[in-house]
Image 1 (cartoon, rainbow, N blue to C red):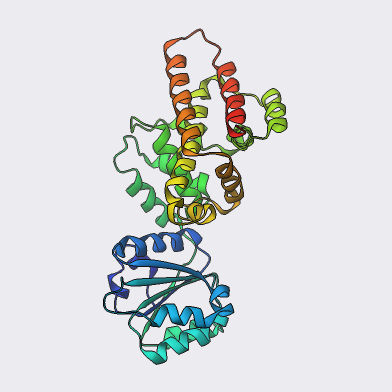
Image 2: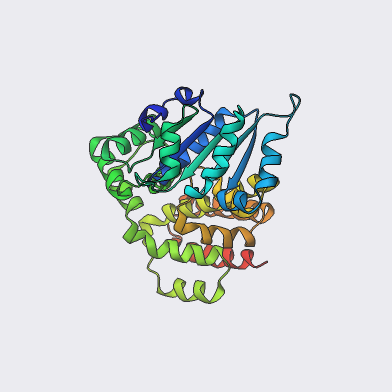
Length: 330
């Protein structure tokens, strides 16, 4: 059976009766949302994340893990990523056994000739959920829901956010994360919102910030001398640094039972795929102790800037960036 994705965004109950659920399409952000809903609805179960290629390489190991369980075992929920038609023989073998365990399959775009798509669309055991690209209506709805407690969420401000994310749900979540961290008083100001979300203006600083957090001394020194910092944006710069440090801190709490790459994949909101190598490189340089020390530095610097109107704030920001580079390499 084919399900509308917008109906399942409210609740996954309609697919609760299905053993196999296929999510396919180009909307990576929407598929990530569904993964998070699955995990949230399965808190008492063991979530087993697998890649199709790993299953195909060792089918016996997978079937052993899937079929061999007792009533005393913890319920398992299987999430299989990056699937295509190669997974069909595995799905058929499970369907023959009529096992009641749930398998969630995630794929990119599958055309109408796809064997796995056709098989699951016709199967009484399965549900299929196309995840098409978002439109302005979807994006507007997400913005209003995430920022419902903020003042001045006007049509103009909503349009600024919509334009900045270019109807990309993953980028939208990153932008919303910036907004919630920057407007701590929950009062959105249009001019500051434009500045915050203007990628062209912020790219230079973000590049500098990333090089400093990665411990790249040569590039950090070069960029500090060549990057123009605007005085009125200094508190935003501190917010962007704090935001990244908090994300790195979150990675370390998530990696207790997994590796760094998996921890980054489990971050909420999801990390934009182009930024994952940067996150991974920085996560290897930082630990909870260094993050705690540096967040304290950022907080104290912000107090200094707010309490002393004559201090050269640009020099303080550049000094902080040099400190980030030193601490990353310590």
